[in-house]
Amino acid sequence: MVLDWPNETSPVGVAHIAHPHPLFGGSLTNKVVATLARVFATLGWLAVRSNFRGVGATEGEHDDGRGELDDLMHLVERVAWLPPTTPAVPLALAGFSFGSFVVAQAAAQLQSLGAPPRHLVLVGAAAGKWPMPGVDPGALVIHGEQDETILLTDVFAWARGCDVPVVVIPGADHFFHHRLPMLKKLVSRHLLGAGAEFERGATAAGPAATSH
Image (cartoon, rainbow, N blue to C red):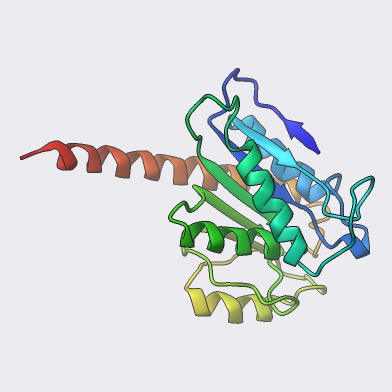
């Protein structure tokens, strides 16, 4: 596990970032995953990167997303409070390729428990490769125009079902070669904008809840 700490002494939240398919070289050192971690850390989040089971020195074997989901949910529970005596902090989930499938499932599970993540970022969403669940329309979905691993047409077909927008980077392939700066900028803008929107909503709801 790698923890990317923000400059602030107290993180504004915890972001879990999931890597691409383990059987095709995916690990926490993947460049897209590392880029996502840097964006979150720069904006004050504690970014958590961990290898899926069977990768590197981790135990177990690849489990087609089932065991990986269990592992991620276990991490969410363990790292949601830092230190354990403090209240829960906001949660963000981000995933690339196969990792997007895992975090989308985690987001759906957390939603069913009444504790949805503050942010959900799906890069190279695994539609057409794995049974991606529907996601909240507020999620950020980024895909490469020239992705030959996960076809853009499959992503659009999945996105229609949950009415979520898809941000397409022109000329980008599956691994976003030479497009990582653009990816970083898009995620940063989204997090800042979504955070401001959340604060405005909380402020608007506050007085209404206390007025008589």
